[in-house]
Image (tube, rainbow, N blue to C red):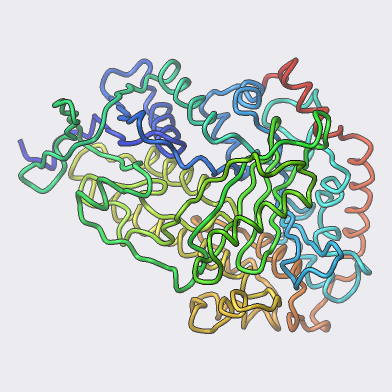
Length: 522
């Protein structure tokens, strides 16, 4: 039979973790595996290899992912120690620490979509008074400051009074997804250690060989083996494109820390605090805080980076940091030159990785898994076209993500060699330089975000650009043709803030009620 007419029926995924199990579950759901004998999804997992386990922040897209997989939101929150996330608070990114809390928010939602009515130029013109940008266009910054949840205990699953995502325990999440995918969705789980590849005559992968002699045959292979990239990188020989000349951070020290008390407030945002040679993340789960110092090894030593993180923990209420264990992570910053080669594609760390500043890793896993499930080729002859579209899409998404993350460093006016090096023109992608040059006099336009594959929308760029209060970004006030409408909408934001402050519960209180009683069904 002509190889191009051969059916793509058996998909083999190498590696578990968040990437592997999201991909497996998405495919299983799309193919209705539980009652479809024509397809098979097999996930091979070595239980001897630990997951990275620090990707604990998500985007609002995760709500749709969980709902589509048929997962109960209350069960997810309970089993994954999850809490609600409404955005990120960036502390001291604007300038060096001076004893005052200088921060801004990158939030998940504005009251008015700037693609429909853009309030940013009117804020720049002073129509919102002295309010910070996020506080002028969204109620969410006010909700975060009050420590409130994004929904009530009576709100239906995956609905919210305002947009939200989650903080979660990465290890628990992988186990939770695995159980659901195997027991409810029909994914076949194979435990074993990868040994090698058996090749087909046409250059495709025919089977994966395990160390105990077993072979797992398949038609399409998905590499979710993490930084090692055992299939796409090592077996297929697809080179890695490093971007360490653009994003300078290459290491992280991670520490899990306790709360100061059992009833301590649970912030409903990720906290990112700038440091001399990087930044510290602080994510609040039900039972602990997940913290880490992302840094450039060219600008600070491991010991100095760890000391900085431990001092941060002391300053934020942790009593005895000497007893807390740390973990050092070396990060391969960059992406594969192809994401799909022949009948092998990579999703997750085996495909690409950028520093976790905007929690984009899990979102990009979701995006890749969604695309694969939606466009899964029916035959081998369909694969070249799907492969081309997939490579174009993922290349665009990753490059735009790199631009967005780099923008945070370029806009910062902090001093110190690490920050100065990040602003060197040769480290800034030309695409970002062009955008910033336009935004200095014109502002951010919706027409710059017309691609379906755009990872960050217009309002995300505006939250960072105007939250940073970088000098020189203004617009021509004579173009502000709808001032009365802008004032009306700004006043409406204030009214919604007041209403939400009265309606929304304390974040910890809501989480504890959900753990006890669950959530209303959809």
